[in-house]
Length: 132
Image 1: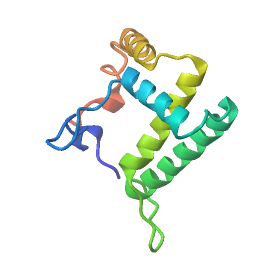
Image 2: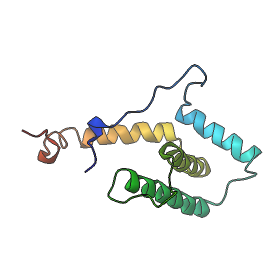
Image 3: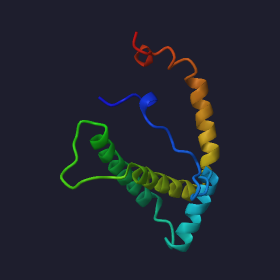
Image 4: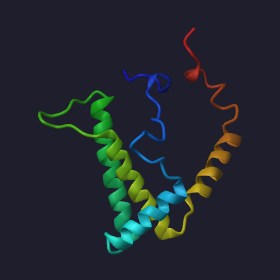
């Protein structure tokens, strides 16, 4: 059985001596757009990017099911969880850029919605209470 989220490692700090701080969501959207325009030539169509997002989520799912689930890796098989998550994020940012979604604003509104909707829901869920 996998560990609870309380026992899982959290995100690493934003900056190390040899690495700049992580970009904001707005900066990440700008960086992806600049990369697409300079190296990627142009965005793939929204439907192609949707298919790519599903593919990347599948790769993440495969790795998680082998790392934390009941499946095992095949001989010689491995994966990089952070890289797979970054692949998902990259394609999601592409879709946001293409469709005019400001991810910073969308994230803030979504978190506010969840906070209002779920203010007591999780606290009163007996499945989430610590064992007696």
